[in-house]
Image (tube, rainbow, N blue to C red; front, side):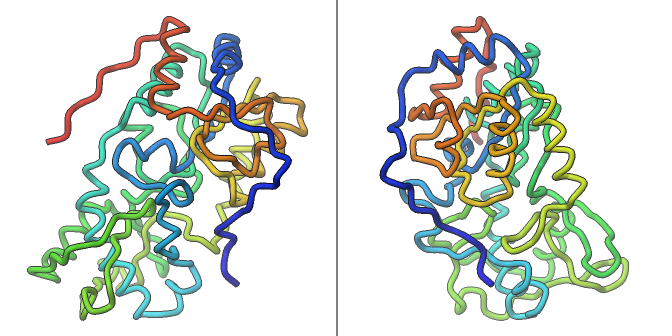
Length: 298
């Protein structure tokens, strides 16, 4: 079964607002739990799935079932992911990530649950981050469970595929590069160095369940929070939407910053339809919180 990848907003959803005061007020009170999605990383050069020009218009993400069952699918995945990692791994945190980190440092944000696999919240300085869907910076073996750094795998793949450098049509939020089958060619996939088993990025693929203990940890964070602030997520898939529903059912206010309608709008007090980087920087300034300057890419 294919995972749910799209959602059509109903006609009766309220329009987005440009008023940031509800967000400022919630953060001033503290105890705000952030739930972030791909939209917070677009200003770092990583496209989202469903926004304007989103990658789902041209790319269907790999499912766990395809990856586990097919050597051909794994070859295609690792060729695309290996090429994408060269760009993805160099992405830098943007103003939105830095603002969230600054707000956490001032005790106004309690924790971050991120649906992203790019590690940019941590690189910006956020400390209490739950990677709901894992991280592309780690690799695990499906046979023996051994874990290893992505940088180590990248080195091995470089050695096994000298001269592999096709031109990609684009990079996707999951780190894949858009390559044709001809460009993938006979790309060589390397096995686990411990047992010779199948290597997989330590991320939750579409069609794969988030580990139950991780879900329960997130549920506890929602229950302990005073407010849930959603940043840049369409909430199309249940992995994130369930926390919005839990917050609403628990009487916790839900605030959303997203330029596009989301599946959680019906549960939210407001959706602010502004660009995340500038909006969060503005919020921080109104609260007297200084946001660190960004580092230029080299």
